[in-house]
Amino acid sequence: MNDQMPAGQPSGELSSDEKTMAMIAHLSALAGLTAIPFANVIAPLIVWQLKKDTMPFAAEQAKEALNFNITVAIAAAISMILIFVVIGLFLLPIIGIAWLVFTIIAGIAASKGENYRYPFALRLVS
Image (cartoon, rainbow, N blue to C red; front, side):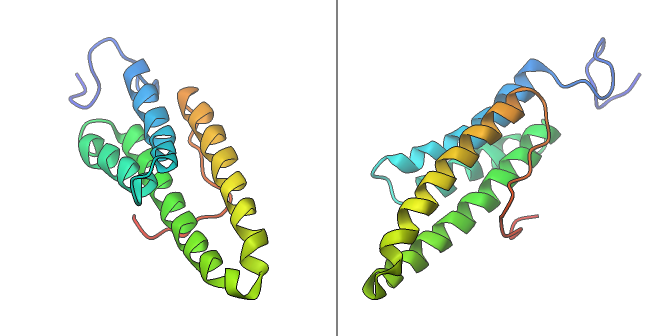
């Protein structure tokens, strides 16, 4: 009997709970829409810390979400600085829309059990 997989669960098949936690890892970044500073980074970090030892798929997706949201936070900070030379006014909405779209796509993919990788993200947490 395999100690890592629950009895009756074929290897390679993800449980519904693990898919749900992976989806929550991505969609928890939407907490960034609140007034809480860096909530979009903190929420996936919390999911990763809670699930890193028990749900490998959910933990991997939480790390992916964390890396993407750190990248978005850096890009937003640079764009805010660039507001003084006008280009930031154009970059901030683009970053915001891309963040929202990619976060939703990632949440949907994770809920299906697909290993989603964001098209652009600094891999700072490994």
